[in-house]
Image (cartoon, rainbow, N blue to C red; front, side, top):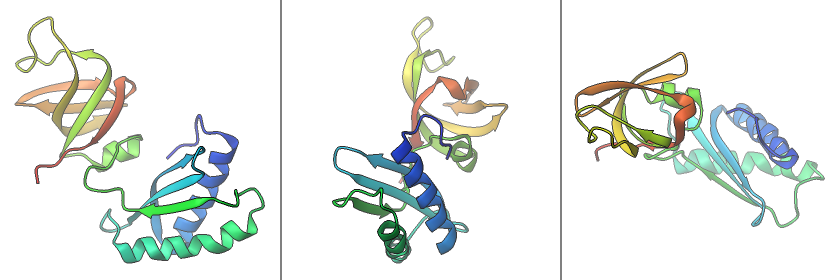
Amino acid sequence: MNGESLSAMEKKFLDMSLKVAEETGYDLYDMEYIKGSKTLRVYIADKETGSALIEDCVKVDRAFTDHVEAADWVPEDFVLEVSSPGVYRKLKTEDHFESAVEELVFIETNTPVEIEGVTKKGKGTKKFRALLKNIVDKKLILDADGTQFELELSQVKKANLDPDL
């Protein structure tokens, strides 16, 4: 996770979340603060399994208590939600994409992308599913229906894991 383009409140919550995750032995996968509902969503992952069980979430939730009570900047009616990133976890950072190599992903791009053999010639698509083969120099190496192609990480608007279940 990077702290770019976060508000001052979000940066404080990010620092707190990183500290709590470290203290409890988990990775902080993602964090979001929803200002309107004063909700902090923290997504944690076990360092070995990459997921989190309900017991893990409860442990992290409880570890937040002292930090929240000691911080005078936390809103009184603040809501904390601790969760696993989930099977369809969002991919936001380069680290997220690196952890998803050899996984099926669903990607939405900022501009249409032409994929030979997949899209009609001259007609690109902004949404597609592909196997993430690698990530090199901020470029995703993808395979869609046997066609391998590259996509700049900066072209990705949204992405998530999209496994066959």
